[in-house]
Length: 615
Image 1 (cartoon, rainbow, N blue to C red):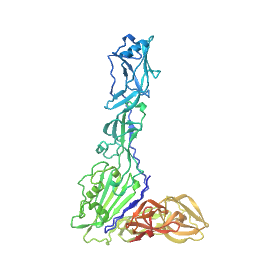
Image 2 (cartoon, one colour):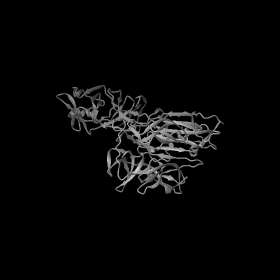
Image 3 (tube, rainbow, N blue to C red):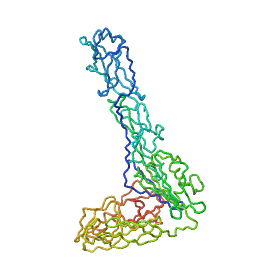
Image 4 (spheres, rainbow, N blue to C red):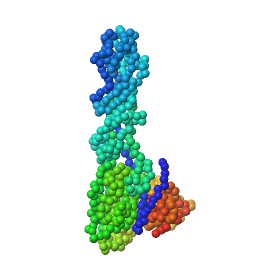
C-alpha cells in the first residue's frame, strides 16, 4: 500500500492545543453485506417472443407429412446448457420451402431464433441458440418427427444466456424488512452481477441506519489530513458483485436479495462544566444516513453569571469501524476556533453543540458513512466571576493500585484537586502487603491515581483465591534498591527468577506488550541488567525500556518534519511532527542501548530530547 508521511500540526493561538494520535489495538469491523441469488420454487408468470400457429404438434405426436403446412408449429422444449434448468417451449414455424424439403427428403434444416423472455417482474432475459446447425427428421414408420442438434439426436433445444436484467430486493439483515425493489437493466457480465447501490439510485434515504450495498475496504483507509474531522476521512468502497453460472440463468433465479448490515450509530456526548463541576450533559445519537435535527441546543449557565473559558474546550474522537485512525483529541483555543470562527468575527458562547455538528457534517447535518460508529466527546467550561483554578475542589472517587496480585480497587476516596493524599492498601486474606499505604494524586479532571506498586507476600500455606507468587530467595550478589518504571514494547516480555546467582526463565507467565510496570531493585549478572517487577520476578533491561513519570509540553524546532520513533527506536516512517508545534508528553523514556532520553507524545511514539525544546 502506498505510504505517505502525515504531518501532525498543532495550532497555537494564545492557548495550548494537543492534537494527540493514540494508537489502538482494536481490529476493524467486518461488514458482511451479502448478495443472495434467489431460487423461486414455483415458476412465475412470464411471456416470450414465441408466436405459435393455429396447430401445434410435439416431437412425440404422430403426424402425416401431408398434413404438415404453414399453419402448424412444431413444439420443442428448451433449456440452457444446464439441462435441469428448463426454459420455454419453442415454436418451430417452417416455411413452404422447408416443408417441401422435409416431405421430399424426410429432413430439413431450420434456424433457431433468439429467445427473449419477459419475466413476471418486467425484466428481459436474452438467449441465443447454442447449436451451429439444427435439423428436423421424419420417420415414415413411426410417423414422428425427431430433432438433431449438430448431428446429434436430442429432445430439446439448447440456449446460451446472453444478457438481461436482474430483480434486486434490498432488505435489512437484522429485521428482514424489504425496503426497496429495483429492476436493474443489463446487469449480467462475465465478472458477475454488479448490484446498484441505493446511493447511486438516489435512495440512500431508505438506508436508515444500515450500510449500503458495498464492500468496504476497512484495512486500507486512504490517506487523511485530519482524522478529527470525518469529512476528511476517505476509503475505498466497491459495489457488491455476485458471481453466477450463466448455464443456469432462468426467470426463476434472475432475482437477488441484498442484505444490508446494521451500523453502529454516531454518538456525540457534550459535557458542560461550571467551576470545574458538571453543569449539564447531553447525548446526541443518530443512525447512519439519518438527518441530525437542526434545533439541537445545550443547557448553559445563565448569561452574565459565568464566562466561557476557551482554553479548556476539549474534543476526543474514537471510531468503531476505523480503529486504524486511533483516538484523536484536540483542546484549547485551536479547537474552539475550529468550531466557532467559521466566518464569524467573534466566537459565540451559545449554540456550541449545533456549531460543532455543522462542522463535523460539513454543514449537511446528516450522518454519512464515515461517521458510522463514531463517538465524539465534547467539553466546554464556564467559570463564575470569582472562580480560580487554584481553588481546591473536593473529589470522591475510586483508586486503582497496581500489585503483584493484579490491580486492586479502593472505592470512595476523597481529596482536593491538586493535593497528594494517602490511601490505605487493601488487605487480602493470606497475604501481607509490603506497605500499608500508598500516595495518590488528586487530578484536575476529577480522578485520583497512584504510581506506587504494592507487593503482597504470602503469610501461610493455605489455599487462596489469589494467584500464588514465587518464593523470594536471598540472591547473591544482593540487588541494589532502585525504584522506577519500565515499559514493554511490541512483544510480550519473558520473566526470570533468580536462584543461586543464576537467572532462569519462568514458563507460566510473561508481561504483555505495551504495558507499564514498577520495579524496586536491579542487579547485574553476567553483564546483563535485570529489574525486579514482583517477588522474584525479573525482566532483562534489553527487553524493556526504563522511564520516569512526568508530563508537560515540548515544542518542535525550526525543522519541516521532526521524526518519531517507536519504543524499540525504529523510525516511524509515515508520521512526523510539524515545525514549531507544541505536544503534550506523559513520560520521559530512556530508549535503545545507550538509553537516550525521549519524550512520549503518543502510546508508542517518542521524540528525541534534542529535537524539541521543553516549555
